[in-house]
Length: 497
Image (cartoon, rainbow, N blue to C red; front, top):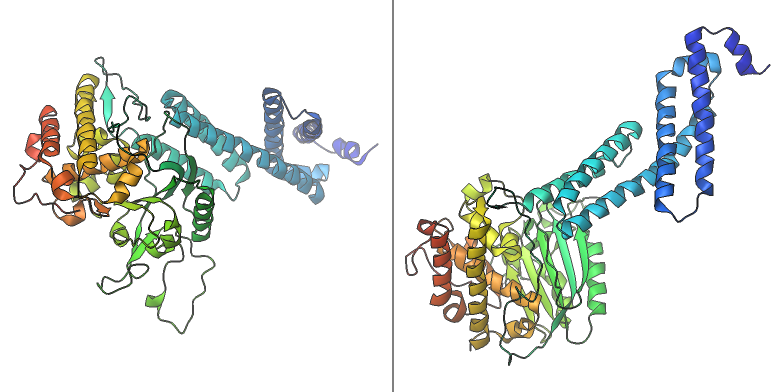
């Protein structure tokens, strides 16, 4: 008779049940684990079902041996190597579980891009349950990261519904912001087409982001989405995008991150002394020289304007959404290639800070101008019929401003180099809309509340053109918020980006 069989003689009924159940779970777990190796690599449903059963059994086995450890140690003679073996196999299974969590996360991103919001919410609930099961059972080291992922997905959903557009029966409507031939800003037939957008880098280091747009009229540019990259990671992707640029191709770099201010002296080197934006807040790997004063130390992962100078050897379109965006407003043209910078306001009114918008206001204007307009006017719900009427005003603004760009005699030629690309043209026109809305709005007072462009856009011919002012004021009248905007010529209204 085996040792286990002999020990059963001295056990009471409850102890026998514990040992028998443990032996049953142990044997079943071994069979299922070995069966995983024999499954074909194809057939996702078959593999997922089998893995789920294996994971559930090992989860139950692990919890069972923890709950009945005393009985199993004293009566069954549970050895340390047996516990280690179970833990080892469980360690292999969480690796597969992490792949499952990543699958959910990627699926959610795809559904967000496709605007399948009902499916997104269902998937978020499932992901939350999977994360709870994973973290509560195994207490893994990456549980904080997965909770952060879940929180950021939820924040993204909230950010994408800043304004609630409803149907006649008060049902919320999911809006599409895709760039199509129907909503592409018009351009005169004779306008020369110099460059096309080929490479996009989107960089974020803040909890509140907004999503981008896609262009269905032609092949999409190649995109990199970097979240909290280190300087070396960002530099690597910049170099890769730079290398892949074809002739007559342009690179778009969009960065949304907190600023790292430098010195404010006018005689400082604009390349590095004026600070920049922090793409990652990690401190590991820093070596502090004790002989230097702390004030001499700079953020390791701060992107300075000078860091981008080498990449201006090819056409570069830069968008910076930060509270230190002004550090990038003196970009030199060192290689004769077109360089355009669209820079966010560095401040927003206190009242709008209190509303805790998810995402940056400047990015919201570039993403959906009408949604941003409603937000600065404190309009949170709007009927779809009124929305469509207002969107016609936005389209009118884009058409008129597009004509002004083409006809301008003092516009820097760098803008026209990029103007032939549908997506870049849309960004430039939305920048103008943002500038005019904020400079007319009574709640935004002072240069730090307005966006800035480099090279500067002409004031009289574009930024303060009466026809554009009129469209914005007409829009405010349609939405019954005309009192929030000043008349052109009032003391608070002054231009110069």
